[in-house]
Image (cartoon, rainbow, N blue to C red; front, side, top):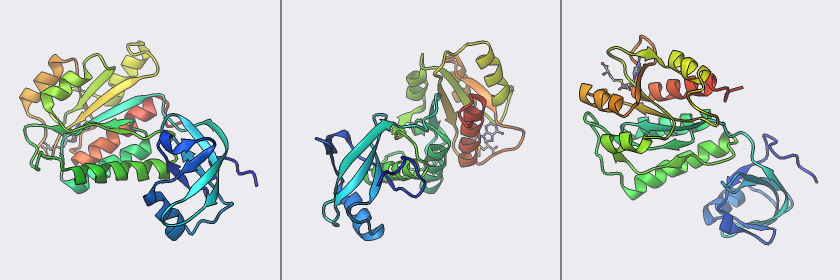
Length: 259
Ligand code: SAM
């Protein structure tokens, strides 16, 4: 049975390259359990496997059990659905459910990376436990599989605001979403910069988003000193998680990555 890759009813799994060898795929124990008990998959059925290296494989399941599941690679092609714009979000550390919403929704929209930022007015614990980090990774993987992404957005370790400013230096166009003060709309800055060719394709962009209490004036000034452009997301005050979704959408739309 030939299955055209990308059919919506074909399940997709990100599998690390070392599990793809000699034309075979060995799924992880978690994926085996999901295939055998949740999806009740059977040998002979086809799934899509992505190696997070840009390749997508049509795989015929060979053995399926909750403990171990394997498959045979039938064909491969370049994984589509990746935006040309490599957008990394720098969201301030928020309460878990809010940051998890940012990870899920912005993965679906097309963000390529997340670097949580510890800014002055963060009012949550700034130590990210291994459990929490793994939960965030799982949310990203599930959102990427569901939205048929070709690659997994990268989750960077949480960093302090000054480190984040240093991190983006020389790495494309950088913006800091600011709901106060003198600043241009994100969209009009993008139109200006993209038209002027200030940033060569593929675009690397970075977007900082503040915590519930917002950024301090000093943080905005520090960002400016690094060439990070304060931008408005409109005249209304958005929740931090809403701002991340709006900012990501505006950038993806303006660079043509939502076409
Ligand atoms: N200080 C704000 C207030 O007065 O209520 C609260 C900050 S807002 C809840 C959280 C973050 O979302 C801000 O730090 C900013 O990064 C972003 N944000 C919200 N609304 C925005 C807007 N209209 N323009 C630009 N950024 C915005």
